[in-house]
Amino acid sequence: MLTMNLPNRIQLTERFETALVYANHLHRSQYRKDGRVPYIAHLLSVAALVLENGGDEDQAIAALLHDAIEDQGGNAMREVMHQQFGDRVTAIVDGCTETDVTPKPDWKARKLAYLQRLQQADAEVRRVSLADKLHNARSLLASLDQEGEIVWSRFSGGKAGVLWYYRCLNEIYQATGDDYLSQEFQRVLTQIDAFGNSPE
Image (cartoon, rainbow, N blue to C red; front, top):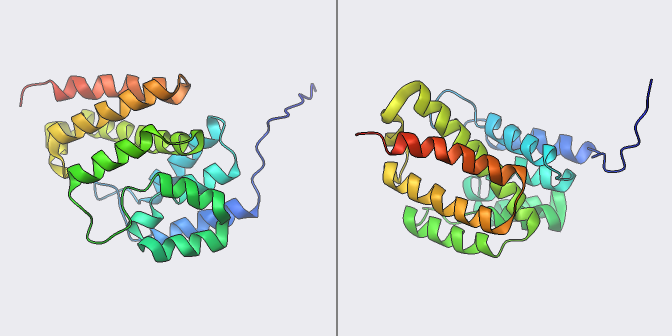
């Protein structure tokens, strides 16, 4: 059997396992917007996209925890995360967090602030952010294909807001890199736009 030397092989340690169990614990009562799929499915998908596209263990851990600060305790959660997983993971999650306050600010204001920060984000934050938004976009496209226009009613920004936000994200992703995830996000967005331009 031919053995290949893979110098860039990604090693996952017990830290990843700890993060996986912790993420499942944090989000165990949450579901995706369809109300059926456990939220951990999204976190697993984002982590998989990160690992499949060059991310390392810290980035994969950040992918599992990318919603923890926003949804599970704000600054208190940030401190716990820092103690358990260190500076780098916490910095990536911070970069992917829209807000750490409750109640959350206005939807449009949150999105504008996130877009502004994303333009200056480093490559690690960009990778996790892009994996997150790509999986969200794929899920949206699947829901549109299966259920039709009713899907838009699940989103705070509505149809117009979601399309605006995804187009803005795409502009930033295309301007800051030419990788598989960027190309895939644009491809999925093109299909979402086809639904978006269909008659009401």
